[in-house]
Amino acid sequence: MKKHLHLRVVASLFLLPFLGAAAQAGTASIDVLATFDYPGASTTHPMAINIANGVTGSFVDTDARTKGFVRDSHGNFSAPLVEPKDFGLETVPAGINDSGLVSGYFTGPGAIFSGFFLSGSSYTEFAVPGAQDTFVTGLNNAEDFAGYDSDPATGKTHAFVNIGGTIIPIGLPGSSYCYAINNNNQYCGYYRTGGASHGFYTDRNGVLQYPIDAPEGAAMFRGINDRGWLVGSTTDSALTTHALLFIPPRNFITFDYPGASFTRFTGINDNGLISGEESDDLFGTPSHGFIARARLSRTGD
Image (cartoon, rainbow, N blue to C red; front, side, top):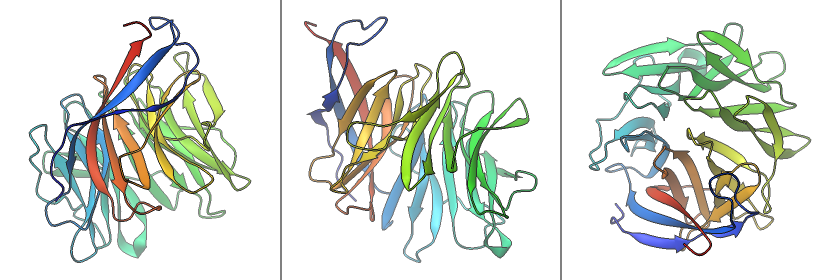
């Protein structure tokens, strides 16, 4: 397991002047507060972080099985999380709200993916009617949730949100993936079309914004907080993946974990704490988890 550390790094900035309360040009820094691996894991994938700094995600054990975990704010890990109907391949928690409800997906019989929710020790499955596979990703405090499903006829994936018990498809070209939804029902993700990936999100007026591309390459969003800050990653022409913080409408902040070839942010809470993963490998395997804090300051502060 990697040792915990406190590391302050000034992130790379592609900024136009901040809007609203931050109306002047500014600087940004990323404080890495801790690194972690699930005990005995060969790789660790944090996926989301809630307001209590609880992190959920998955890890690969010594038998090459993917299982889930929750890590509390003190660094304590849950026992491995395995959906009871898991076919034996993977259980992947992908979201956690402020009450500790966990969302995710697992492989069931026939290697078909289904979504799940975990409250305490109780699992509830969810599948989109008519879909081949269902992946539930992020959720908010009202238990509205984001995800994507696959079409058995075309094999394409389609992003959706479920708000108030109603599944709402997200109209995007190609294959699309929705990863997170905040308490204002803003959501985000990315889509692939014509061999290229692009980010998307909904703004505070509920308007779908796409395509979103960072200066280095595609913006692939995986988290959004109630301030509308988005996190994810972008990959450059040299295939180096950089963690990405995006403050709409046009402020891109990239971050590289020192010495890593792959860095990705996966979730962000309202206090600016971020879950992420880093790897020495260009494609992110094996990876290690970390928690960071984003800080913005106006010029002259």
